[in-house]
Image (cartoon, rainbow, N blue to C red; front, side):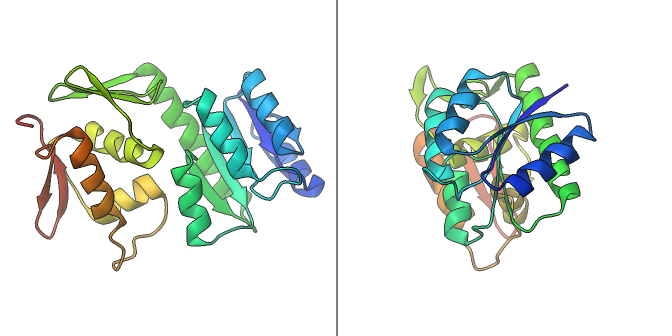
Length: 223
């Protein structure tokens, strides 16, 4: 039975989550503060964390940052009333695997939890992805280019993982944004292009090719 850590200070919401998850075969524990949540996340055998941002002692972004310093692999789904673009981006940049705003539908949250657990299990079974002499270690979230380790941000790594799972395939901007950032594509946004640029600088200028009017492709060789 997968164990879920719920970091939520509103007792009503926490109780609702515990009951809902129990009915679908999950065991849950609740932490009401960021400090308690961090201690439990680092000390317990949890499969996933559901994290509120508005906590009474420190905000959830602090907890996420501290958690990612010690554990890159534990999936985190942010569940919060704070739904601005800035907050959403901060959550993903900080290493969250998903981001939902309150009020929410439990069925959608459950689907996202299952999807993130599936991703985690896949990373455990297939810990290394390699293309053109560059290796992604999905457990340690590290990247090695020609024997040299390169530091990627959480979003850069997520984008690299998407490309490395589909080498030689053209991925549209809409697909990339949906898979990596988790929200609908804004035709006026250039965030995909910006992050592809970041990856090119770190992986190699020839690693990713722009395909006009279609998207981007990770080349299988010739970096």
